[in-house]
Image (tube, rainbow, N blue to C red; front, side, top):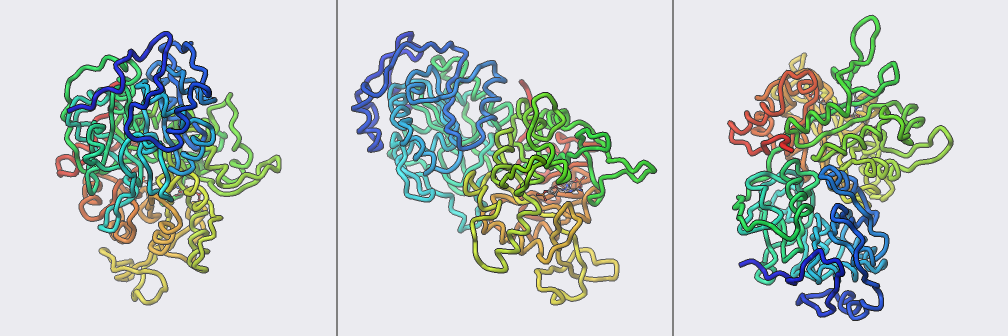
Length: 594
Ligand code: 1PR
């Protein structure tokens, strides 16, 4: 049975009034104390918000641009919360919790927003929490804790258990089980939605009345809650394509008048992701173009030797989103010099990398990952940027995850040499601030054949296809600077070290296979995906739809990425997914039906 609404009072009242009587059985201590003070603290007055304005609680911890973009796309404006009163006076409040639990609670408590949120939610006002915005409603979290939450829902938010081989973070697309009328979830049916998190709340006797859907990832966990007008979802509607936009639309359009139809969505396994990769760089005229290497050589073998140009970044990314890509992966191959000169974006030009990201994120509602140039550097004016600042700029411009290449290799080498995690590397710093689910490490290895696996100090494996001299073994040497410099570390050692240092995912390229269309390097992908517990994206070499089913059947890769075949329209994303379905591999179907 559905939990009783918190209050039967109309939501959009011209002169809202708020009860100070606690309507929830559980409360965070700070909320309980503050509640008594609420009338002194907050001057509640008639809201001047129009129905087309949504209040957004952005406490500055990360990328809420995606949520903002999705809201705008649906025809609404956003108003940012500046002070606790803005929460209490909101007509509709969206709380896209970003980052880690403890710092978020800290900011909420110190700013007085925890109290305001409790007041708002207890008054049964239209609320939508997203991801951490759901978790914070619970009593506490084990994330770097225990840390007390807002205490509105019984339960402790804990980490997924990876001891049984489960890959954590849980990144990707799952369908959710919607057992009853769920209000805002009514349109999602059996569609997949996008999750990215390491912590989750689980259903219990005490919280069952709150639960509107569950999902299964190694165990059942709470995918969404609903009580009266209060909703929260663990997944990211703003990154869940059409299905996710329908959730937001239902919340925004008519928060007080949902149909009572049940969607009966069934939980699914985590879908294998199909990712479109866009290698972006300047051509010789200075325009940013999508290029594509042939074993990382992006120049045409003509007299002019120009940079291969396969299209415009924003347009291609939009197209891939419409075609059903589960993610778009931008790699900015700009030279350090270009990066130094152009890092700061300029609103008048879409040529600049950050602007590309901003434009893309306005229309592409699946995750965007961005890599290239994430390291400390000094710009043309002598201004120093830390890698964390560079990453923050990417996040602010619309990235959901950032991808580190060369800098992660140096960090792993230092870690393996000293055995010490300094906390100073870009990888450690960014994952500390944004969470490891937001940090991908991109590995660019080159195969080195061996007659004898003991010839190197690195992990060598027996290869399926012997080398040119009949060598039966190989190790995979990591490179930096776009494959130009080999380093004394293997892909296996690097993968394990970066997992330790805080990477949440690995993009596993292979220079030998890049652009060849002959299939993924199954030996390499199996080696790495078996060695780590974080998700691995198989990359380099896709030429046919069968290459995708092969990599998913023979390895435990969580996703497969391709570039050339999509850019040249030789194989469509839709056909890849149809093939995977025929092969009984779970995928998210459906492009855009706005
Ligand atoms: O070192 O942190 O600045 O990051 C640089 C990033 O740019 C790294 O992730 C590195 O992989 C990437 N990169 C650098 N140079 C190149 C190049 O091609 N010259 N591109 C490059 C790497 C490889 C793949 C490619 C797949 C699939 N691109 O991502 O898209 O191999 O291609 P395919 O399906 O056509 O075979 P830092």
